[in-house]
Image (cartoon, rainbow, N blue to C red; front, top):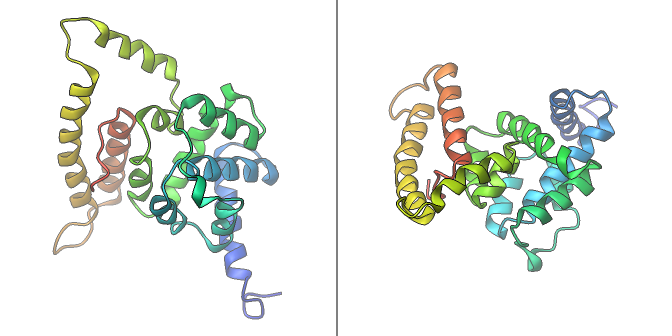
Length: 215
């Protein structure tokens, strides 16, 4: 059945394109494996967002994947606890992988969706989550994070909360710069290279917890 006779054909085609992108990213020809990974990412992240943020994320998805996103969703029970252990357990179980394999897999899916979403939109979603979960979603091993955090236990160094507060202020300025690079006022968008560089810089800052949900 062609696109001209099947009103659902365009939605199915777009969903297959997104699934193929995930399959290519995780280096598999098994679409069921890719489907499990994508579904695990969507549900695990969705359950840790409030209703408005979940709606914002779902709006970026093709129609067919939007239905998968809301499958089994219970708005009265979200957001669920944001601890790393439950996040990894849910993702690993849904994706059919070990908790150790869940971290790099989540990172690959995040990178793939970042390229498929509108520029900067995934950053806004991740900004709703605690720093530790952002690390997981960016495929970062938390053991390195904990090692770095241990430096702040020294009495002559500032408390982590103070550091995060100052760095968040810095991020506001960076976010404004990123937005300006992507959508220059009164002119055409800059080169793809500049936009990509700005997005990557924003993701690095996001992984370090230097972010604000206000932009």
